[in-house]
Structure formats: C-alpha cells, structure tokens
Length: 128
Image 1 (cartoon, rainbow, N blue to C red):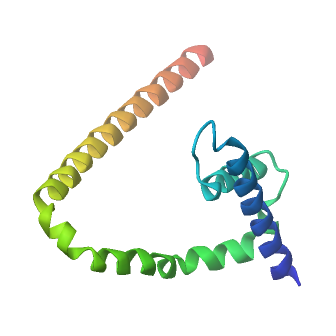
Image 2: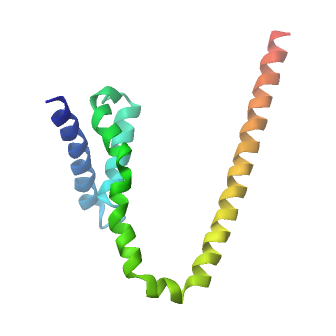
C-alpha cells in the first residue's frame, strides 16, 4: 500500500505540472513533466512533502533510469542517415559545448573557492 501512495504522490505532482502547462501554454511553452519536476522540487524544498513519502518509488525509478532511454536510442538508430549527413556539424557542436561547459564549471569552482576563502579569512579576523 505504501508504494501505491508514493506512486500516487508522484503521479499527482506530474498531473499538476501538466495542468499548469495547459494554463500557461499561450504565455510560454514549458512541458508539463518539467513543471511537475519543478513543483516536486519546491514541495520537497519547503517540506510540504517529506523525502520519505516518495523515497522507495523514486529510488526504483532512478535505479532503472536506463530503461527510459531506450525509445530515444531507437529513434537515433532510425535517424542514422540524417546524423551521417550532419556529422561534422554535430561533432563541432559537441566539442564546442563541452569546452564551454568545462570553462564554465572551472570558473564557477574558482569563484566558489575564492568566496569560501574570503569567508574563512573574515571569520578568522573576527575571532582575532
């Protein structure tokens, strides 16, 4: 029974995301599943729903996430001709995006390290 309650909570949050998506589709197009994840995040963050109320089903879904990528893989196989035609463009995009992500992550880590060092020196100065 516990598992059914957890599935019900997750499906209810997903349905709420779909409902919100239908109401705002004329303003901005955001998929209901994405809005559902945002709603779930907010509910967990503000402790409206405790993590224990969805833990078992969430762990199962995360543990078997690979199954959800099978349809996308099949679609890629069906589009091999299109991929071959645009291989250079796709590889260029992948390489450039990876470089941008590495630079962005590095800069973010540098920023956070400097911020932490400033905080530590400030706390040391207050103690002294």
